[in-house]
Image (tube, rainbow, N blue to C red; front, side, top):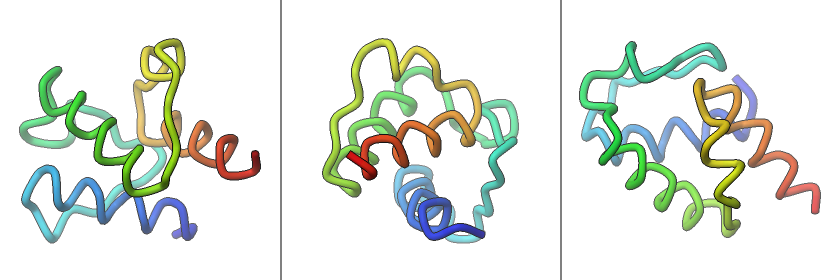
Length: 79
């Protein structure tokens, strides 16, 4: 598991209150109980805070799987 995925997994565990949650790049909302539009917005906000970044509207609209989020996080962290 990459460092970014490990850190994102921590965010997911906090947002969904499930400490045993294990993400893969292919994980999507249908595989995480409670991942709906409202928790998606909370997840985006908490991810931005955790990584010290800000997603654009277009970036957030492109998030369909965890891997999509990881790519954008990595892009922001590379600067």
